[in-house]
Image (tube, rainbow, N blue to C red; front, side, top):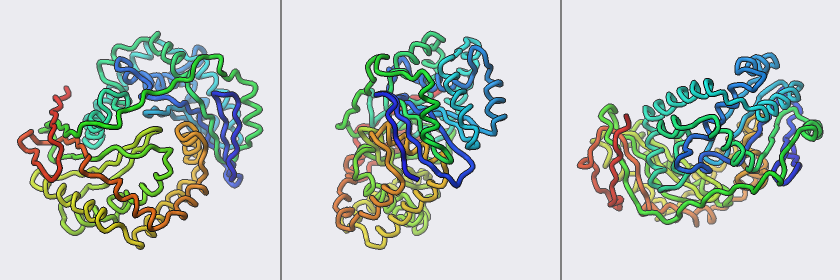
Length: 431
């Protein structure tokens, strides 16, 4: 299952990973742009444009596109992230060629009908409302606002009701020409695919090259920020939702493998120290975990937990205690072995899905600069030594943490624990 890569031109790369025993294939068209490339007035425009790709062309309606895809025994979907957006298909292997043709028709004949645009804006307004009503998702949005102050990485991917309502057809066309068409592109396929056949089909398409304009590059985020607690009173909620964390390494940093191991030991697995202490031993929390969110040039380490007001301070204190113990005593051989095996197992399970391999290869190509095979990642975990991983526990500088909190609280409820941020911001209620 070797990865094959061909640079079609300085902007466009084809990556395939053949899995000949499958009957299916996945192919996606991924662009190295997203909400990070928007200015403050453009928040949500990339996401809206992605939605409009599914609303039809000048000769095909949205239902026409759906019927074509379904008649080929395939599915179509899309996404917009902070740094990547894309459209992808999962299909019978023999149907990949007409789906490639369909994609190029969609992106080259974008209709952006004003009536359809208004309908889709209403759909996204519902998404924004749903996001606010999801405390975990909303707490994370608050958290990015203090971790990336006044930077596009803090912008909500779906935008705001105000920005969304301001967009017109010409705005989307201009954004497509100035941003999407001036970004790096990775066409990624995995499953029962043939690299040369896809390459030959792409050679017949009008693929853009360097003549289009300068490749866009994102603004770098600040790496030194003022430690802050941001909170929003939500009397409609019964519990307090807290995300705390700090800035860390980017996706391309090879220490990410060791960071994942340490994160698993702290709170990323059911057997982790934090979960065992807070849920199993103390019985304080039902929901608690830690996670890593890495971008091309910066990253976040976060812990999330849901608590009653009366348990909030105690649970946070215990969380600090576990990190202090980790930094003082280090990890154990048993913890390292268990976490490494878990990471390898999760990679192996995901590798059986062509869609997972398709996404993985595209993400690494666009954000790291080259594809990274599953076998390479497994080898990287195998090569981690006990001493090396232990040497990195000092990366967990809880004294640098900031926090976002939402729930039935007031500023008077925000107790000071340990090295809690002294700066407190109150977020006004969202209507």
